[in-house]
Length: 423
Image (tube, rainbow, N blue to C red; front, top):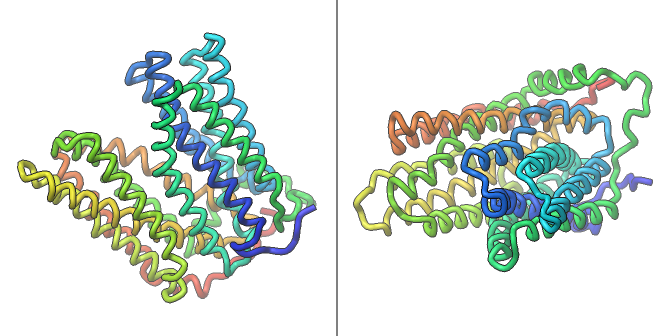
């Protein structure tokens, strides 16, 4: 039976949930590294086939992101996360088993990637919708900051640990460790209690899926706070993706600095995100949410300037462009994480609990939908206009993302979450 008392971030319940989420994040990073390695080194896949494999992991967010929100709003969030973690553990465990029996094929890798991608959609939507059912409203910001800090640590440490393991054991064995991580995640979640009531117990709640999806989209569009955040997040990710898509080309080809420098730049950026998640609760105690979000976006935009400036220093000694890239990546990630944690917390407070998953899925659909489009555009513009020129477009666009945040504090104060009947 669920514990009806909400807790704070120091409670054992939240600690177990945080641990489960951290292990899941680590598992995701392991998979992103090990799956392509299995395809390339074990199954001798070509570049195009590896591209299909990567697309199989991420396309699910666009294909089922919106209906996933409607389904998760009908289901218990914790149970959904447990089932998603178990599914990922089971399907990933088949890879080392088939490899050991010499029956592993590239077709099966595609199947595993699709299943893991689908399960990840449900897990991610449920996890971002779950926090208000566990912690008090006052603790939402601190909870999201802690969850984001573990995501940043996993982003930095996961690929590094996976890389070290790949030097000792084969890639299919690394995926066995990945499967174990998801199993541990499910185990920790099984020990957590929350305040979420049983779902779909009331009469009239069995609406059609399409109606539920449409209700979620309409709610986001009709809520002034969520509508502005959706625009800001979508535009921000679009222009940030342009910068990040071209960053490896800038470092490796335009500046000729090598993969070691690229690893340092990306690693320092992750450190910026981790530090941002640690100091954000203290910043929020002194500043309003609107000001903090605007500050994060402007910091990210100003830091992006370092990328095209570094690209214009071809022929100079490597020290100056590397320093600019490191500072730019550090500041951009710091600003992005500051904005992201705050906007997620604002969204969770502005949304009634019976709409949380659909709200999350609707906004994530915009976010994930903008990223592949931006990546394609970046490749086309980069080849026609030039890498540095295209990056300046990303910089200018990044500053525009703060415009929807103007006046946000007033909207937050006047917009209160109200339950949506039969939604």
